Image 1 (cartoon, helix red, strand yellow):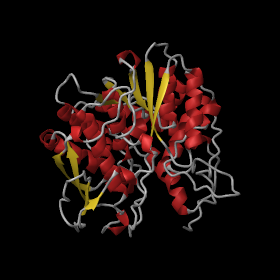
Image 2: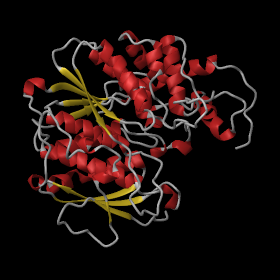
Image 3: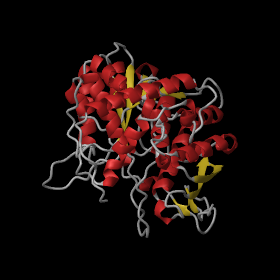
Image 4: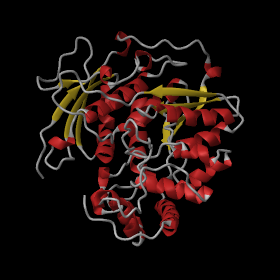
Length: 442
Protein backbone atom coordinates (compact mmCIF):
# COMPACT_ATOMS: atom_id res chain seq x y z
CA UNK A 1 0.00 0.00 0.00
CA UNK A 2 1.26 3.48 -0.80
CA UNK A 3 2.31 5.26 2.40
CA UNK A 4 0.98 8.78 2.95
CA UNK A 5 3.51 11.18 4.50
CA UNK A 6 2.73 11.90 8.15
CA UNK A 7 1.15 15.16 9.32
CA UNK A 8 2.71 16.24 12.62
CA UNK A 9 0.79 18.08 15.35
CA UNK A 10 1.64 18.93 18.92
CA UNK A 11 -0.19 20.56 21.81
CA UNK A 12 2.27 23.09 23.28
CA UNK A 13 2.52 24.45 26.80
CA UNK A 14 4.53 27.51 27.94
CA UNK A 15 8.25 26.82 27.88
CA UNK A 16 7.97 23.49 26.04
CA UNK A 17 9.98 23.15 22.80
CA UNK A 18 8.39 21.72 19.68
CA UNK A 19 9.21 18.04 18.98
CA UNK A 20 10.54 19.05 15.56
CA UNK A 21 10.63 21.84 13.02
CA UNK A 22 7.82 20.37 10.92
CA UNK A 23 5.35 19.98 13.79
CA UNK A 24 2.27 22.22 13.63
CA UNK A 25 0.98 23.62 16.94
CA UNK A 26 -2.57 23.02 18.14
CA UNK A 27 -4.43 24.92 20.85
CA UNK A 28 -7.86 25.50 22.34
CA UNK A 29 -8.00 28.67 20.23
CA UNK A 30 -8.81 26.43 17.24
CA UNK A 31 -12.21 25.71 18.78
CA UNK A 32 -14.98 28.18 18.03
CA UNK A 33 -16.22 28.67 21.59
CA UNK A 34 -16.68 31.40 24.14
CA UNK A 35 -13.85 31.64 26.70
CA UNK A 36 -16.14 30.53 29.52
CA UNK A 37 -16.74 27.20 27.79
CA UNK A 38 -13.11 26.31 27.18
CA UNK A 39 -12.05 23.35 29.36
CA UNK A 40 -9.44 25.36 31.28
CA UNK A 41 -12.00 28.04 32.17
CA UNK A 42 -15.32 26.26 32.53
CA UNK A 43 -16.55 26.11 36.09
CA UNK A 44 -17.58 22.74 37.49
CA UNK A 45 -19.27 21.71 40.72
CA UNK A 46 -15.98 20.04 41.63
CA UNK A 47 -12.50 19.76 40.19
CA UNK A 48 -11.98 16.86 37.82
CA UNK A 49 -9.08 14.49 38.58
CA UNK A 50 -5.89 14.87 36.55
CA UNK A 51 -6.54 11.73 34.51
CA UNK A 52 -9.91 13.09 33.33
CA UNK A 53 -8.27 16.40 32.38
CA UNK A 54 -5.72 14.39 30.38
CA UNK A 55 -8.41 12.39 28.60
CA UNK A 56 -10.26 15.50 27.55
CA UNK A 57 -7.01 17.18 26.44
CA UNK A 58 -6.07 14.18 24.32
CA UNK A 59 -9.56 13.99 22.77
CA UNK A 60 -9.58 17.69 21.87
CA UNK A 61 -6.10 17.44 20.35
CA UNK A 62 -7.15 14.38 18.33
CA UNK A 63 -10.25 16.12 17.01
CA UNK A 64 -8.33 19.28 16.09
CA UNK A 65 -5.64 17.27 14.29
CA UNK A 66 -8.35 15.27 12.51
CA UNK A 67 -10.04 18.42 11.21
CA UNK A 68 -6.72 20.02 10.19
CA UNK A 69 -5.62 17.05 8.06
CA UNK A 70 -7.39 16.84 4.71
CA UNK A 71 -8.14 13.42 3.27
CA UNK A 72 -7.97 14.92 -0.22
CA UNK A 73 -4.16 15.01 0.02
CA UNK A 74 -3.79 11.25 0.52
CA UNK A 75 -3.22 8.56 -2.11
CA UNK A 76 -6.74 7.13 -1.73
CA UNK A 77 -8.42 10.37 -0.58
CA UNK A 78 -9.22 8.79 2.75
CA UNK A 79 -6.39 7.14 4.72
CA UNK A 80 -4.11 9.59 6.52
CA UNK A 81 -0.98 9.25 8.65
CA UNK A 82 -1.20 11.55 11.68
CA UNK A 83 1.42 12.00 14.39
CA UNK A 84 0.38 13.76 17.57
CA UNK A 85 2.26 14.84 20.70
CA UNK A 86 0.20 15.66 23.81
CA UNK A 87 1.27 16.58 27.37
CA UNK A 88 -0.28 14.43 30.12
CA UNK A 89 0.23 14.19 33.87
CA UNK A 90 1.00 10.44 33.82
CA UNK A 91 2.95 9.62 30.63
CA UNK A 92 3.73 6.07 31.78
CA UNK A 93 0.07 5.22 32.31
CA UNK A 94 -0.80 6.67 28.92
CA UNK A 95 2.02 4.72 27.30
CA UNK A 96 0.42 1.54 28.65
CA UNK A 97 -2.97 2.60 27.27
CA UNK A 98 -1.52 3.60 23.89
CA UNK A 99 -2.41 0.32 22.06
CA UNK A 100 -6.04 0.84 23.02
CA UNK A 101 -5.98 4.49 21.94
CA UNK A 102 -4.47 3.74 18.53
CA UNK A 103 -6.91 0.85 18.02
CA UNK A 104 -9.82 3.13 18.90
CA UNK A 105 -8.62 5.89 16.55
CA UNK A 106 -7.99 3.45 13.71
CA UNK A 107 -11.52 2.09 14.16
CA UNK A 108 -13.34 5.42 14.17
CA UNK A 109 -11.24 7.34 11.61
CA UNK A 110 -9.67 4.63 9.43
CA UNK A 111 -6.27 6.33 9.70
CA UNK A 112 -2.81 5.48 10.95
CA UNK A 113 -2.14 7.34 14.20
CA UNK A 114 1.11 7.73 16.12
CA UNK A 115 0.61 9.41 19.49
CA UNK A 116 3.34 10.31 21.96
CA UNK A 117 3.00 11.72 25.45
CA UNK A 118 5.06 14.37 27.22
CA UNK A 119 5.06 15.25 30.95
CA UNK A 120 2.56 17.91 31.98
CA UNK A 121 2.60 19.77 35.28
CA UNK A 122 -1.09 20.21 36.00
CA UNK A 123 -0.49 22.45 38.99
CA UNK A 124 1.66 24.91 37.07
CA UNK A 125 -1.37 25.79 34.91
CA UNK A 126 -4.49 27.79 35.88
CA UNK A 127 -7.32 25.49 36.94
CA UNK A 128 -11.06 26.23 36.95
CA UNK A 129 -12.47 27.19 40.32
CA UNK A 130 -15.25 24.85 41.44
CA UNK A 131 -18.63 26.40 42.09
CA UNK A 132 -19.63 26.67 45.77
CA UNK A 133 -21.64 23.47 45.94
CA UNK A 134 -20.99 20.40 48.03
CA UNK A 135 -21.43 16.75 47.04
CA UNK A 136 -25.16 16.97 47.73
CA UNK A 137 -25.50 19.10 44.60
CA UNK A 138 -23.57 16.76 42.34
CA UNK A 139 -25.30 15.03 39.46
CA UNK A 140 -25.93 11.31 39.87
CA UNK A 141 -26.43 10.56 36.18
CA UNK A 142 -24.53 11.81 33.12
CA UNK A 143 -25.53 11.27 29.51
CA UNK A 144 -24.76 12.70 26.10
CA UNK A 145 -27.56 14.77 24.62
CA UNK A 146 -27.09 15.58 20.95
CA UNK A 147 -30.62 16.60 20.10
CA UNK A 148 -31.13 13.42 18.08
CA UNK A 149 -33.82 10.79 18.50
CA UNK A 150 -31.73 8.40 20.57
CA UNK A 151 -30.40 10.91 23.09
CA UNK A 152 -33.89 12.42 23.36
CA UNK A 153 -35.38 9.00 24.08
CA UNK A 154 -32.91 8.32 26.89
CA UNK A 155 -33.17 11.82 28.38
CA UNK A 156 -36.98 11.64 28.32
CA UNK A 157 -36.92 8.25 30.06
CA UNK A 158 -34.54 9.35 32.80
CA UNK A 159 -36.07 12.81 33.27
CA UNK A 160 -39.46 11.29 34.08
CA UNK A 161 -37.95 9.17 36.87
CA UNK A 162 -38.73 10.98 40.12
CA UNK A 163 -35.44 11.51 41.89
CA UNK A 164 -33.87 14.09 44.21
CA UNK A 165 -30.68 13.80 42.18
CA UNK A 166 -29.70 15.84 39.14
CA UNK A 167 -29.46 14.50 35.60
CA UNK A 168 -26.56 16.12 33.71
CA UNK A 169 -26.87 16.23 29.91
CA UNK A 170 -23.74 16.98 27.87
CA UNK A 171 -24.43 18.73 24.56
CA UNK A 172 -22.15 19.61 21.66
CA UNK A 173 -23.51 22.48 19.62
CA UNK A 174 -24.39 21.83 15.99
CA UNK A 175 -23.73 25.07 14.15
CA UNK A 176 -26.89 26.42 12.46
CA UNK A 177 -29.01 24.00 14.48
CA UNK A 178 -28.56 25.38 18.01
CA UNK A 179 -32.19 26.49 18.22
CA UNK A 180 -33.32 22.99 17.27
CA UNK A 181 -31.22 21.48 20.06
CA UNK A 182 -32.59 24.06 22.51
CA UNK A 183 -36.18 23.26 21.53
CA UNK A 184 -35.67 19.53 22.05
CA UNK A 185 -34.02 20.12 25.42
CA UNK A 186 -36.90 22.33 26.51
CA UNK A 187 -39.34 19.57 25.59
CA UNK A 188 -37.52 17.24 28.01
CA UNK A 189 -37.26 19.94 30.67
CA UNK A 190 -41.00 20.64 30.64
CA UNK A 191 -41.77 17.00 31.40
CA UNK A 192 -38.96 16.41 33.87
CA UNK A 193 -39.67 15.12 37.37
CA UNK A 194 -36.15 15.99 38.54
CA UNK A 195 -33.51 18.68 38.26
CA UNK A 196 -31.74 18.89 34.90
CA UNK A 197 -28.44 20.52 34.12
CA UNK A 198 -27.02 21.00 30.66
CA UNK A 199 -23.33 21.30 29.84
CA UNK A 200 -22.78 22.83 26.40
CA UNK A 201 -19.51 22.47 24.49
CA UNK A 202 -18.19 23.34 21.05
CA UNK A 203 -17.23 20.90 18.31
CA UNK A 204 -16.44 23.57 15.70
CA UNK A 205 -12.78 23.81 14.72
CA UNK A 206 -11.76 26.82 12.65
CA UNK A 207 -8.86 26.96 10.25
CA UNK A 208 -5.68 28.39 11.81
CA UNK A 209 -4.62 31.84 10.70
CA UNK A 210 -2.49 31.92 7.57
CA UNK A 211 -3.26 28.24 6.93
CA UNK A 212 -2.98 27.19 3.30
CA UNK A 213 -5.20 24.13 3.66
CA UNK A 214 -8.95 23.57 3.91
CA UNK A 215 -10.42 21.86 6.94
CA UNK A 216 -11.30 18.18 6.58
CA UNK A 217 -15.06 17.76 6.13
CA UNK A 218 -15.37 14.38 7.85
CA UNK A 219 -15.49 14.35 11.64
CA UNK A 220 -15.03 10.71 12.49
CA UNK A 221 -13.17 11.37 15.77
CA UNK A 222 -15.91 13.50 17.28
CA UNK A 223 -17.34 10.47 19.14
CA UNK A 224 -14.17 10.38 21.26
CA UNK A 225 -14.48 14.13 21.87
CA UNK A 226 -18.08 13.69 23.03
CA UNK A 227 -17.36 10.73 25.28
CA UNK A 228 -14.22 12.24 26.83
CA UNK A 229 -16.08 15.43 27.74
CA UNK A 230 -18.90 13.48 29.36
CA UNK A 231 -16.38 11.34 31.26
CA UNK A 232 -14.60 14.50 32.41
CA UNK A 233 -17.85 15.90 33.84
CA UNK A 234 -18.75 12.57 35.43
CA UNK A 235 -15.31 12.27 37.04
CA UNK A 236 -15.65 15.76 38.51
CA UNK A 237 -18.98 14.93 40.12
CA UNK A 238 -18.11 11.34 41.06
CA UNK A 239 -20.59 9.65 38.71
CA UNK A 240 -19.44 6.07 37.94
CA UNK A 241 -21.28 5.58 34.61
CA UNK A 242 -21.64 7.69 31.47
CA UNK A 243 -24.50 6.86 29.12
CA UNK A 244 -24.09 7.31 25.37
CA UNK A 245 -27.48 6.34 23.92
CA UNK A 246 -27.47 4.95 20.38
CA UNK A 247 -29.86 2.34 18.99
CA UNK A 248 -28.16 -1.02 18.53
CA UNK A 249 -28.52 -1.19 14.75
CA UNK A 250 -26.71 2.13 14.16
CA UNK A 251 -24.20 1.49 16.93
CA UNK A 252 -23.11 -1.63 15.06
CA UNK A 253 -23.79 0.04 11.69
CA UNK A 254 -23.07 -3.02 9.54
CA UNK A 255 -22.03 -1.95 6.04
CA UNK A 256 -24.70 -2.05 3.35
CA UNK A 257 -22.02 -2.74 0.77
CA UNK A 258 -18.27 -3.28 0.49
CA UNK A 259 -17.83 0.42 -0.30
CA UNK A 260 -19.00 1.30 3.23
CA UNK A 261 -16.67 -0.90 5.24
CA UNK A 262 -14.55 0.36 8.10
CA UNK A 263 -14.56 4.04 8.96
CA UNK A 264 -16.63 4.83 5.85
CA UNK A 265 -19.48 4.09 8.28
CA UNK A 266 -19.62 5.78 11.68
CA UNK A 267 -18.30 3.64 14.52
CA UNK A 268 -18.49 6.10 17.45
CA UNK A 269 -20.60 3.85 19.69
CA UNK A 270 -19.60 0.48 18.26
CA UNK A 271 -18.94 -2.13 20.99
CA UNK A 272 -15.30 -2.36 19.85
CA UNK A 273 -14.89 1.42 20.27
CA UNK A 274 -16.45 1.45 23.75
CA UNK A 275 -14.33 -1.56 24.73
CA UNK A 276 -11.10 0.30 23.98
CA UNK A 277 -12.34 3.55 25.54
CA UNK A 278 -13.18 1.77 28.79
CA UNK A 279 -9.79 0.05 28.81
CA UNK A 280 -8.09 3.44 28.38
CA UNK A 281 -10.02 4.84 31.33
CA UNK A 282 -9.19 1.82 33.49
CA UNK A 283 -5.48 2.18 32.76
CA UNK A 284 -5.17 5.94 33.30
CA UNK A 285 -7.57 6.38 36.23
CA UNK A 286 -5.16 4.76 38.68
CA UNK A 287 -7.52 2.40 40.46
CA UNK A 288 -10.92 0.70 40.29
CA UNK A 289 -12.46 3.17 42.74
CA UNK A 290 -11.90 5.99 40.23
CA UNK A 291 -12.83 4.12 37.07
CA UNK A 292 -15.80 5.33 35.04
CA UNK A 293 -17.53 3.08 32.55
CA UNK A 294 -19.02 4.31 29.29
CA UNK A 295 -22.09 2.30 28.28
CA UNK A 296 -24.72 2.35 25.58
CA UNK A 297 -28.11 1.87 27.30
CA UNK A 298 -29.87 1.33 23.96
CA UNK A 299 -27.49 -1.31 22.60
CA UNK A 300 -30.26 -3.94 22.51
CA UNK A 301 -32.95 -1.66 21.02
CA UNK A 302 -33.85 -0.84 17.43
CA UNK A 303 -34.60 2.69 16.25
CA UNK A 304 -38.29 1.90 16.41
CA UNK A 305 -38.00 0.73 20.01
CA UNK A 306 -36.10 3.89 20.94
CA UNK A 307 -38.87 5.99 19.35
CA UNK A 308 -41.44 3.94 21.27
CA UNK A 309 -39.54 4.61 24.51
CA UNK A 310 -39.72 8.36 23.83
CA UNK A 311 -43.42 8.04 23.00
CA UNK A 312 -44.08 6.14 26.23
CA UNK A 313 -42.25 8.86 28.16
CA UNK A 314 -44.93 11.27 26.98
CA UNK A 315 -43.30 12.89 23.97
CA UNK A 316 -45.60 13.54 20.99
CA UNK A 317 -44.58 12.92 17.41
CA UNK A 318 -44.06 16.65 16.86
CA UNK A 319 -41.23 16.71 19.41
CA UNK A 320 -39.49 13.70 17.88
CA UNK A 321 -39.94 15.27 14.46
CA UNK A 322 -37.92 18.25 15.68
CA UNK A 323 -34.82 16.19 16.47
CA UNK A 324 -31.68 16.10 14.32
CA UNK A 325 -30.70 12.69 12.95
CA UNK A 326 -29.07 13.54 9.64
CA UNK A 327 -25.30 13.24 9.34
CA UNK A 328 -25.22 15.56 6.32
CA UNK A 329 -27.98 18.17 6.73
CA UNK A 330 -28.76 20.11 3.54
CA UNK A 331 -27.19 23.58 3.23
CA UNK A 332 -29.43 26.48 4.16
CA UNK A 333 -29.93 29.11 1.48
CA UNK A 334 -31.67 32.49 1.90
CA UNK A 335 -35.14 32.48 0.41
CA UNK A 336 -35.41 28.68 0.30
CA UNK A 337 -37.23 26.31 2.63
CA UNK A 338 -34.89 25.13 5.38
CA UNK A 339 -34.56 21.38 5.93
CA UNK A 340 -32.71 19.67 8.77
CA UNK A 341 -32.66 16.27 7.08
CA UNK A 342 -31.56 15.16 3.63
CA UNK A 343 -34.03 12.27 3.77
CA UNK A 344 -31.97 9.90 1.62
CA UNK A 345 -28.79 8.88 3.50
CA UNK A 346 -28.80 5.80 5.72
CA UNK A 347 -29.32 7.60 9.09
CA UNK A 348 -32.40 9.29 7.63
CA UNK A 349 -33.69 5.96 6.32
CA UNK A 350 -33.31 4.40 9.78
CA UNK A 351 -35.02 7.46 11.28
CA UNK A 352 -37.94 7.05 8.88
CA UNK A 353 -38.33 3.38 9.78
CA UNK A 354 -38.17 4.09 13.52
CA UNK A 355 -40.85 6.79 13.51
CA UNK A 356 -43.03 4.68 11.25
CA UNK A 357 -42.70 1.75 13.67
CA UNK A 358 -43.54 3.77 16.80
CA UNK A 359 -46.11 6.25 15.51
CA UNK A 360 -47.33 4.79 12.24
CA UNK A 361 -46.24 7.96 10.43
CA UNK A 362 -43.38 10.42 10.06
CA UNK A 363 -43.99 14.16 9.67
CA UNK A 364 -40.34 15.20 9.36
CA UNK A 365 -39.91 17.70 6.48
CA UNK A 366 -37.18 15.95 4.48
CA UNK A 367 -35.35 17.64 1.61
CA UNK A 368 -35.99 14.62 -0.66
CA UNK A 369 -37.72 11.27 -0.79
CA UNK A 370 -35.35 8.31 -1.30
CA UNK A 371 -37.70 6.63 -3.78
CA UNK A 372 -38.14 9.75 -5.93
CA UNK A 373 -37.42 8.76 -9.59
CA UNK A 374 -35.98 12.23 -10.19
CA UNK A 375 -33.10 11.62 -7.80
CA UNK A 376 -29.65 11.37 -9.29
CA UNK A 377 -27.91 8.01 -9.16
CA UNK A 378 -25.52 9.33 -6.52
CA UNK A 379 -28.34 10.31 -4.15
CA UNK A 380 -30.45 7.25 -4.91
CA UNK A 381 -27.64 4.78 -4.18
CA UNK A 382 -28.47 4.60 -0.46
CA UNK A 383 -32.04 3.48 -1.10
CA UNK A 384 -30.93 0.97 -3.72
CA UNK A 385 -28.15 -0.37 -1.48
CA UNK A 386 -30.59 -0.68 1.41
CA UNK A 387 -33.03 -2.78 -0.64
CA UNK A 388 -30.21 -5.06 -1.85
CA UNK A 389 -28.96 -5.46 1.73
CA UNK A 390 -32.44 -6.34 3.00
CA UNK A 391 -32.70 -9.06 0.34
CA UNK A 392 -29.43 -10.63 1.56
CA UNK A 393 -29.17 -12.75 4.76
CA UNK A 394 -27.22 -11.15 7.60
CA UNK A 395 -25.06 -13.43 9.75
CA UNK A 396 -22.65 -13.06 12.65
CA UNK A 397 -19.82 -13.07 10.12
CA UNK A 398 -21.29 -9.92 8.58
CA UNK A 399 -21.09 -8.22 11.98
CA UNK A 400 -17.33 -8.78 12.17
CA UNK A 401 -16.50 -8.39 8.48
CA UNK A 402 -14.85 -4.99 8.94
CA UNK A 403 -14.71 -4.29 12.71
CA UNK A 404 -14.07 -6.90 15.44
CA UNK A 405 -16.31 -7.41 18.45
CA UNK A 406 -14.89 -7.35 21.98
CA UNK A 407 -14.59 -10.61 23.94
CA UNK A 408 -17.51 -9.72 26.20
CA UNK A 409 -19.92 -9.10 23.29
CA UNK A 410 -22.94 -11.39 23.02
CA UNK A 411 -22.99 -11.97 19.30
CA UNK A 412 -26.39 -13.65 19.09
CA UNK A 413 -28.03 -10.68 20.84
CA UNK A 414 -26.27 -8.19 18.55
CA UNK A 415 -27.37 -10.11 15.48
CA UNK A 416 -30.91 -10.14 16.86
CA UNK A 417 -31.09 -6.35 17.19
CA UNK A 418 -29.77 -5.93 13.65
CA UNK A 419 -32.36 -8.34 12.29
CA UNK A 420 -35.17 -6.61 14.16
CA UNK A 421 -33.97 -3.31 12.75
CA UNK A 422 -33.98 -4.83 9.27
CA UNK A 423 -37.64 -5.78 9.77
CA UNK A 424 -38.44 -2.14 10.55
CA UNK A 425 -36.59 -1.09 7.40
CA UNK A 426 -38.47 -3.67 5.35
CA UNK A 427 -41.72 -2.14 6.60
CA UNK A 428 -40.46 1.24 5.35
CA UNK A 429 -39.64 -0.22 1.93
CA UNK A 430 -43.04 -1.92 1.78
CA UNK A 431 -44.94 1.32 2.36
CA UNK A 432 -42.87 3.32 -0.15
CA UNK A 433 -44.70 4.17 -3.38
CA UNK A 434 -43.72 2.16 -6.43
CA UNK A 435 -41.54 4.17 -8.78
CA UNK A 436 -39.83 3.74 -12.12
CA UNK A 437 -36.08 3.29 -12.35
CA UNK A 438 -33.88 6.04 -10.95
CA UNK A 439 -32.38 8.22 -13.63
CA UNK A 440 -28.71 7.55 -14.34
CA UNK A 441 -27.21 11.04 -14.41
CA UNK A 442 -24.90 12.04 -11.58
